[in-house]
Length: 192
Image (cartoon, rainbow, N blue to C red; front, side):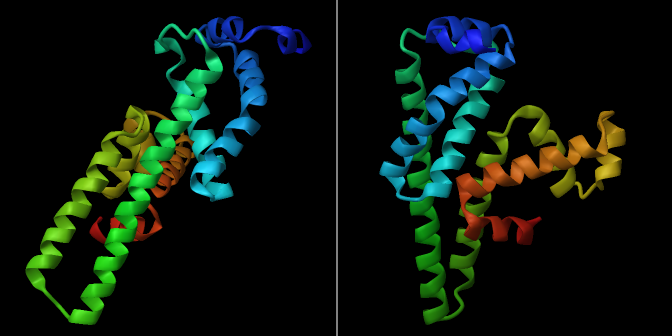
């Protein structure tokens, strides 16, 4: 593994595409800290910056076989972080808008048609983010939350372990929490 410290980024990407975990770890170790600092400068939230970088590397690993030709690894990773930061900011704005609308609702009283419209918008946002989950994670999450199957039932249906089911659901909630925000995640439990 010490040899990889001296490998150039292009060689590490080729090894990563072949499924080399050591190459992935080396890329992670090289770029994790600068990417977290970069994300933190954009959003000002250290924990969220770490989550964004974690998600970038998770995506890098899961899509390693479909990676395009990468000339500059650092530029590619910074672009991935930039896109995740933009999504984060967009979702924070949505969350802030919902919080403001909720406060207005509390101040002004019950408006049934407005509530239905907001529920529909929120449901569309939730469905969009669920659809963006990795396929197996999405399948497990839908079976759990929409079909209300237990971990054991899902494991039996998909021929996977209950531990794997639990990890998929935990991962899905973590991704949704980051993308949708805590405020709308509470509504997710309410709607399902």
